[in-house]
Image (cartoon, rainbow, N blue to C red):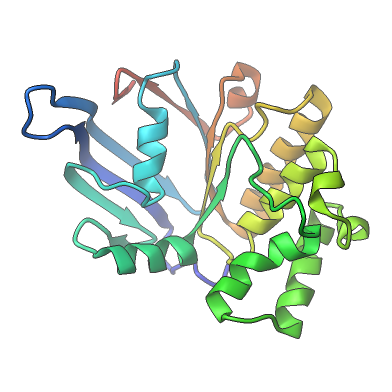
Length: 231
């Protein structure tokens, strides 16, 4: 939890709106006055139909896009006035991403994939980075596959490598966008249980986007997004 602040609050959105084509005749507002708070160790499901604004909301929280109006604080740091370089720094330090598709580099080993975020921050590989990557793979029960090309692993194994990679920088926040959507039931349960364990043991706040109502009921709370509003 190196990058967690002493504050329990990891995410705070205040009256966040997002519009596209601003100032043009076809301007459209996708998110409407969103208020949301998420604390350390909290595991929150995000549900809603396709086109409801879930992905836009995650992009803004993940600092991949900027709100049109409102304020967003990540790990206690107000972000709406930050320049792009500062947003990149905060995103790399505080936020981990797990997507529906794992986005691993298939020609690289499982170990190398987990090392990449740390090497990017450090500029080169070190013994400490290698050992930390091994510990992360051990935590997802994949250490014995550390030197295997990620492209040769099963879908569930690849997604667990993606979770380990997302945790490499000790993020305060983990954004999981349909991480079990492409997996069979057994593999999906394994990935979900892994994320739950990380949240509880590491104090990582998790936003878990899912279309699976059964999984949503297993989260601490559920946010429903409909037509760009939290219901």
